[in-house]
Length: 500
Image (cartoon, rainbow, N blue to C red; front, side, top):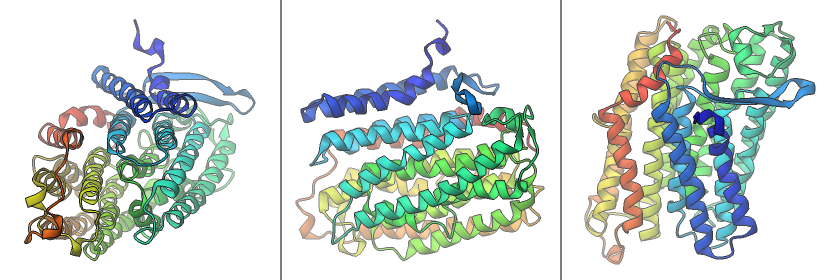
């Protein structure tokens, strides 16, 4: 049987929603809620891995599903994956599956919590699969509601947190960016002849572009939403608050894949499928300016991280820095830098997802996140200390971890960019962010785990068997793709084969 005949992308996309509906309508007991959540996140993950195994490494869009959606405006239900989107789909389904186990001890309103968590997975997956601009925008907005609910209801309460404030701030920033995106999409729609939302037709030249407003205006209208989500300095201020006050599993998903929606959108929509993009030629004109913002994000994020005393805020600001590497790779605009940026998206999802999971475990065992109030935890929780250390070393780019090969590929590709007039300078400045990163990661690990033990934490236990299972899964993937990155690069590279 042909795998495409069962519409695998639709199954992966909507199974979490089906699970959410079953939980909301029928699951009465906590055990049933958790079991349903496990089943309806494991099947999409297993199916996405299967698609990765049978994916044709020669490239191109695969497992395509296309049907008329709104005929009057030529909008389509159009799904497909290539070497850019398939790794993001696998990362999303993996983190969605793991997030269920990270949430295993949620104490209140479990039915609502797991239902929203599964709906969030569908929203994110839809962004990575959509090849129709209107469908893309719909899924971009769908993820907003579950995120708001999960942060505002199950987030960190006062006095340590401000969950309602952080949730509303996240919504305001996202809606602000979405308004610009919608204006850009509609401007692009009316600029095409015949009018279409089809990304493939627009990027491939099947639809002629006769701009109703300057192409640069369309570029930056769409880019604004992605810059907020990435986030790019100075549009980053929602991120530390959202991370600090989100439940642990939501922080894992937020860092792991929600930020990648911004980077993915930049490549897919404004940088392009094959060097042209949906707004041809504009990315090249503004690449140097955007590379400057990338370097600023790297250095500012790293410097801000050093000053943090809350573990969650420290990891959040480090994300600003690491996503700056992605932005630099994207707008160096060559095959190697874009492949590196995509690999860095995947790498950051695994590493930062693990870091937030580890912060959650430390908080669960000690009920503290303030670094000065912690210390010597390696004696009480050796497994957590070792895994946290591995995640930290991967974040600073230690060889044999995926963090190293991702950053190296970005730097090597950007260094050899013929588009950026000062490419080497940009790379040297960005690499200095790694030096700062090594400082804040090692200093944090030393203060939390390797100073003199404190008697007040003698009661703190180590990770239990369930917790060991999901954190070891992260470690295995971080090391696997670090030692053998071709597993991903052979899938990613053909997407950018036409670039210089």
